[in-house]
Length: 98
Image (cartoon, rainbow, N blue to C red; front, top):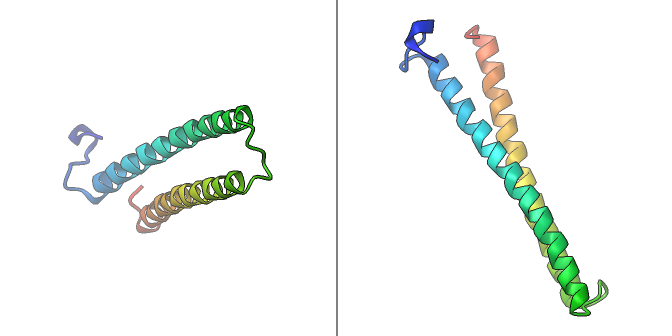
């Protein structure tokens, strides 16, 4: 946004849009990391089979469980950030700043 559009860096709308832009970047980064982790997990499973570590092995199960917890935390973080963005958008709408 530019001052040309009538919005200056001191305006609340400018601050909100800047914050939304940062959240969008964060969510994009999280999605990229999740995709990379998915590929990493596939690689780990392949290597586990190569080392003859089976899914019924206790170590394998523990690592799989920890991996699922890590995914859950990352997913929770992404959802919380998305909800924050939605809240800001709703506030903007309710205040008539859009």
